[in-house]
Image (cartoon, rainbow, N blue to C red):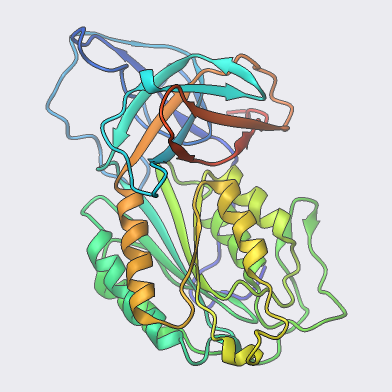
Length: 370
């Protein structure tokens, strides 16, 4: 694994155990919400719900008249809806949407507008040589974003990536700790040892013998998704502050995308490119295409910032609005085969010129034995 200065990443399973409760509600209410939610397939049993260490127990005072626990395989996704001008559209219901898996219509079992559900957030900051003149700007605006978006039940972590991937601050709700972690990010253009690399889908990845290794971007996304966020439940997102240029990752962009999809992570990329570093014409800079692939597949988006601090502030404001204006949709797949394959999911509006911003699908990973 890449060197981590403060903490080793933890391995995590592909599935999260959760319990769905069928609750007696008034006729006017929406479908009953699950006790815990995950944006991927969830395996549900008759046991009591597990409360993750970073989440407090449910303190709701509304007690249902009766609760029946059932075994259900569910898929859930968080998504945004925008009009043709890009403005968020609130107050929609499940009657406004159809959902399809691999082209087959599915029955919506759960639908809710989620503005207050706890959020687990990762801030990933590029500290390679190309960011030398914009790093301080990233720190300042990133810290303000965390201060504005984090609420009492939310948690965040900070990772920097250059020749190494460094966990500067593990999960915390403390903005002061997160701000301090951002301040610790330093430009690093030094060499790196080939002793040990990240563990990919087929096992340890050997160190490349050719090409520069200065920005382990794909490795960082993989580690943040698979090892940090893979064992979390609920809403999960990462914000990458980078020019998108990978130099020397041992993993590929497809590995990073797959890890994010399996961990149900929404990826946002703020393209902060000091074009002067690459020459007047941009030089060999071409990181935006791979970053668009990452964000489109995971339900986030890529925002061009350049080196303008006001554009960076506006981009963070847009992300905050989207994360606080999400819908949560759930269904029980008709295809119950857990063969590890990728299932393409499409959410379509029944009427209106709406744009749906959602992840492209999920992996039907085999259930882990308990």
